[in-house]
Amino acid sequence: MPALINPSRPCALPADARALLARWGLSSSTLLTTDRQSPKLRHGQARARAVILYTLPARSLAEAINPDNPADGPRSFVPSLFSLAEAHGLTQKARAYNACPWATPGCGGAGGACLAWAGHAGMGSPEKNPIVAARGRRTLARLDDPEAFGRAVFWSALRHLLRARRDGLPLAVRLRGTDDHPWHRHVVPVSEAEAEAIAARYGVDVTPGEATMAARLAAVPELRPYEYSAAPVNGPLGLIAQRDAGPVDVTSSFKPDRLTGCADAVAALRAGFRLSVPVRVKRGAPLPSALTLTAGGESITVPTVDGDAGGDHRWTDPHGVAVLLRLKNARGCGPEADAFSLAAHGMPQHLPDGSALLTWPD
Ligand code: SF4
Image (cartoon, rainbow, N blue to C red; front, side, top):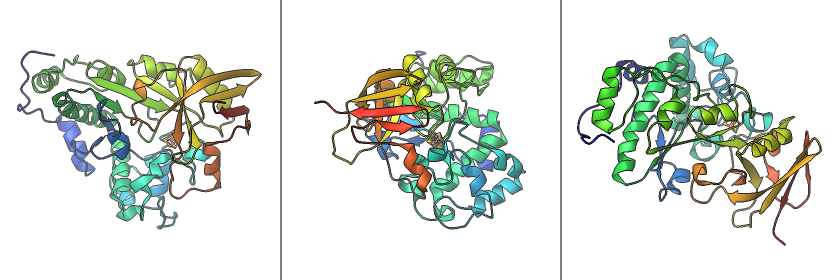
């Protein structure tokens, strides 16, 4: 950290990022959701301050701008988003957009169990729900100008870093809050003048030029970038590529209804990732202590940790474990949502390419 930091010195958002946020009715202070606003993040306040980027998952933006979609229910047509998309010439792009390339019907389908629709985000009609509208505007803003949007997100994270530093804690940063956007390949350019302003205002050394968001976040010692992703292990968009681009702490998201769900989960555990597993366990009931996955004649048994205890700080959990997350009530679910989670019983659960077994201590 440079010796001379002046927190009162202005460090305005770059002009392109500021213009983009203004165009979409967004602001730097509310672009990221903080541990002050989110009960999930509040639980982890003893370990770190935290910010998450929430957008619309999977094909929800296309549903939100589709006038044929009924205008009632939590996942329906949002006239204001439709008008914005039309006004900015983004309707075609938004209709084709899928924010979660590896979503399954159980999570990202029209009636899927994605947690994006749990809590306040699933309440009331979307037109009257400011959370859904704001997530939609963030998603549209990213489609409109990815570079400026990435810069706005980076500057916003730095702004929240000041609060974490004042409290003597690191700042946890999760950008795939409700989607699977490839931030490990998303370039965030910084000019020489911007790097100087960032050093003076935030006490952060930033290398001028082009670097990915993952590399930018990982280069700031007080930040803890972490993500969940449903990507496969290998390939340019895969878990290893995501992790190594930072490094970023990455948790693999188990998709029980994927045709290769068990094999992908076994591969992720074997590659050293932890696995997040949604389970149907009643509040207060004991959690299983181990998960056994079988696929292609291969079996692996790993211990579990309680993913709801201590907030969302996956980066503090060991690797090679199953992180159990109790299923939250997402609104507007259809029958396909049942396949999103594992039941809490001690019998093998037969899945498309294998089986899962949750067990408790004797
Ligand atoms: S659960 Fe994850 S992959 Fe599925 S729709 Fe939600 S954010 Fe996307």
